[in-house]
Length: 68
Image (tube, rainbow, N blue to C red; front, top):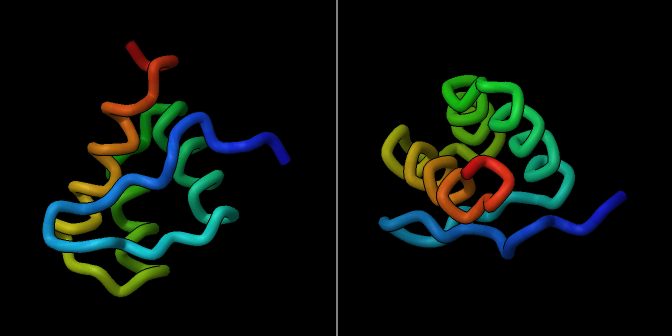
């Protein structure tokens, strides 16, 4: 499995614990234009709220140089 391009993002309201396997799934969803599905997946798997999940995904998107 290739390493993540950037360190795990931290949500504004606190740290969201996301296992590496889930992070890889999130990258795939983001890169295929499915950020809403990625947010839902973060919420389902971690139990965080909508804002925390959204902030986590937005931070992933902002830190990903391949999306620029």
